[in-house]
Length: 248
Length: 49
Image (tube, rainbow over all chains, first blue to last red; front, top):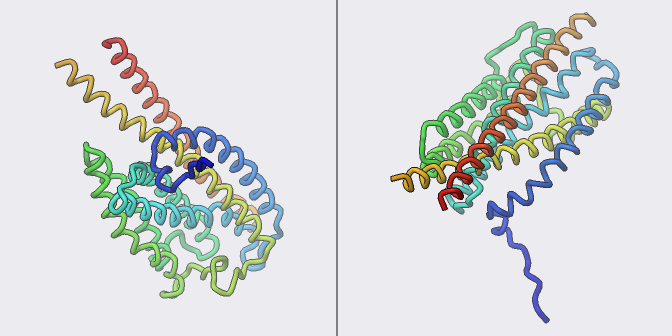
């Protein structure tokens, strides 16, 4: 009896397969993201005022998912950096380059919305507290990675340099996560991802998780579009060289 | 207090919305530009052959 060919993980490294897969995954992710975000914000804005913060807690539904995504995207980029250096996965550096601007954007949203939330809560827009400072460092690392990509003409040479920088920068991720436990500051301690379970009331937790899921799907769709664009950019570069050589 | 909170909440959501819209616009324009350039180059090569 003939054996059915089984798909291997390495098959996903094929850019053509990625193009086919992303062609229907992008609209699917976008279609999932929009109602999730709408429902999450609706639930969040229906929730009763919080005991200590009254209605200002509503900033949480955009601030917290942005922070999680900024950390998650960097972690994904670190795995992609390993994919570039160790496994030489042909899509790893494409994914890493495409993800960096989104990571920077979510880190910026987190910093600015956190600052806006901080003023009525703490009485200041900014404090050099462990969580705020390490998040600012994460944003600067993202900017450094984007600049390094632009500093090289040859994408493969850039990929190696960026992968090393990304791996070194990963040291900041546990610092962001545990900064509220290691140093006392203005920022509150973790209330969702804790070993003893979330301490947040479900009336706030459910909308928060719905919004986080919605933002994640939105990021997934945007990442795939950006990866397709990056693949096209590299093909444009190769074709431009071919055309120039043929013209000689 | 309630009015003040509304101002801060609106500011936070407006900023986040602005950044997200800018991101979406940027990826759409960049994608379109690369596709256009790619189509032009492929057409030029096909013409030569």
